[in-house]
Image (cartoon, rainbow over all chains, first blue to last red; front, side, top):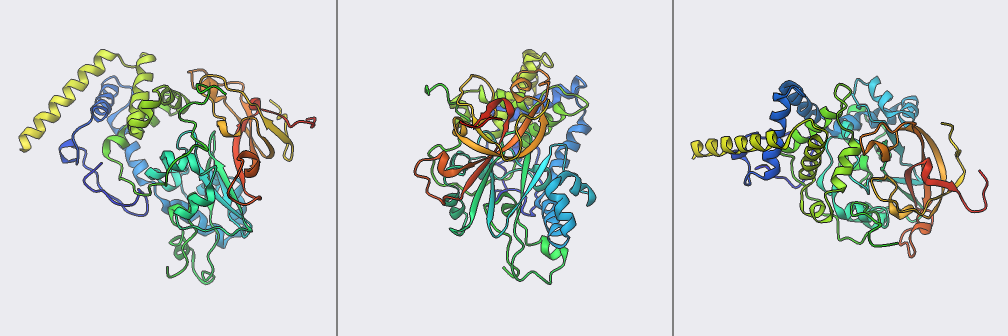
Length: 218
Length: 112
Length: 99
């Protein structure tokens, strides 16, 4: 854990510089930290990867944040044709907005007045990281992976999200070759808002499905 | 079903406590093992697949799965695969690890 | 490879427990569901995991399950569902259905 520890996961708009020297870190240097550094250096020495490639990969993942997913959702809220394309092919729709959604196919699942979608990966931790950054720790936790498929409403309630008894809760277990992005419902009172303002209402958790989009002024 | 049939990582439906919603910011070494793994799987290299990574993590066993952090499991699986495939040898990795540890210790002593 | 199942088909997930790396979670094995989407064809992860190429590619489906069918004493609502991506070789026609 770095010296900058927060009660939130990555990607709600915060950006932190992380020190690369272990002496600046909060805890003793671990075995796997040493192994990772050594592995990187051996692979660079052998010409398998270059230092530049490694740096660029780290930077690429660092640049991924929920703002990209939020842009797609906001555009879909104001443009029904775009929404259709988003629901058909997220990667293609993202490219229209010059957003790199990566090579893994991503599907958007739409929340409606009848259906609330929530995403989990019970076997590992598959996550649409190209559009919303690396997953928060809880997404990878035993509790979330175990319980979300069996008692989704109880898990959602722990996140402060109550879904009506007349609604269908639909859990997507992301087990194979797809990643999922929840398209939350556009909140009431946002009718006059522009795309940028709308995007601010779309938080990371609403695109995982454990929360709803924020209401204007919330 | 035998107790052995259901594998440890296959968690859907198991009993578990509340979801701990705190989190930590990823540290540089965690980002680095993630980046190394992605480079090794890219079209230029195709040296390992994400399925091999997962298989390697599952084969670490239940105790390791529970006690190691997420990216410790990635580092272990990735390294094991590269040794298995002959991309690196145990000896060169071991020597480099000693070198890294010595360097970091020296840097720390300079600071103090 | 032609997809054996189509949207709307009722299927059963094989109640099998082979060793090794598979992507079919235990909690749906032996359960009935409905195909809601034919996603496409993908390399077989059970082969990719061991360093092989995973060809031929295998059709992958969205299979939707009723939560009340998966868990006895399910605490949510009767209309709640779970959707899982499942490869074709893990599926068979549901009892009494012909493909």
